[in-house]
Length: 325
Length: 275
Image (cartoon, rainbow over all chains, first blue to last red):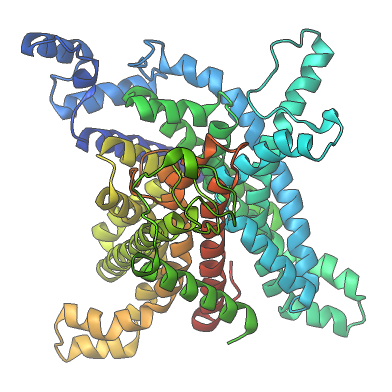
């Protein structure tokens, strides 16, 4: 119980640190929001009035305390570009990104661990080397480039090869405004999701397969397996009960650590496939230098990463008896 | 040296040499625009009106894609390597400082690293690249400032372990200056994991550079980089897919080769399986 409380306290402290850090980063940058909002014909007096109305005339310390106060109460300010509350913008974008993230993360872990364990069972064999080359190649491909390739393949590629039009997957957006029935809409969203989820899962699974292979190979060299084999346990049984159980905790840790990479990939995937999620929101905000939205999106991403690490920490004792207090 | 890493190292060497040598070998200008209508969108292997063969085709302005790809490689490779070395050096410095000094210094550096690690690196890069004027110096600085945490953790752990060793205690006891003890006796023994992490970081830095340039926040056109070449090919994806294909393949080959070499180094130097 005290362990749980201490972990949650540390996570909250980390969220506060991230808030402070992003605030500092935005204030180190040259220029401010008032300069961006200033109309071309504006003079010094207009600029001063704008600064005062945005609270930018206060000392940095005061601005920081004000901002931390409003973040603590859940108020993230309003977007400079659209004038809408950042909280509303995030609330609209979040479900789309969570859907994309959860679906591709599930696929990432299943495919990645499966490929990694197939490799680890044959460590050193030609098949293992071939799969390592394949996963390294996918891992090395920029996500946005893979996404563009998927778009080209699913549109003109399918047409050029004369494949049935059912395979022509929609490459942009989340839904087709022409589809009106409820069941049709579900199928439509799912069809729109195939390409983004697969592209994101492919890069993620390549990374997880590399981790899983390494963790399993290390676990297979442990004494536990040799002892099991010596006392007459079959090879498959030894693998299931002694090797994979030993490797699971490190795989869970590494999957949690790879989450920031999945988030980075999702920013590009949402950009290419025009999904109005958090990544697209952040990209637009960056292009417009819309600081409140940038701050809000950064905080949301960091909170997700911290929450995932906390979950991994809390799951580990359950997977690994040695970590139980 | 086993087969796969040697092929990877060879591929890296050939690509780097081609990138370095391209200004003296190329007959085509990578940036200047000539007779656009006669030369644009030539498919790979096609000859233009002057009888010049374009191995990887030409882009929307009739420029040779292969020459542009190799010239872009000069920038992309330089930024990737500089970014990785910058973050490795910064990480080794801060990690050694944290492990050696301990106390408040250690707590501050560890907290900063934890907070930076909690923000996905791409998000951090986007924020930084958007706030400062885009360009190559910004790019390298930002890559270094957002990539040092992993190396710092490794070096800190090593230095913590070495600080208690007898020979380090002996050096302190006979009055060797503190910075000299750290430089001569501790760092050389703590640096192997940092070197491995830095070499594995080259691939990541090249990928991130291509991503930022793709978004228009990195290397600015007309100077070609792999990322902004892919961005330029995006508009002509269905008419002339080779414009985006060639620079993308260059990134894949470079990053895959750098990763395979890094894996091998990790196996050799750190004595453990790649992760």
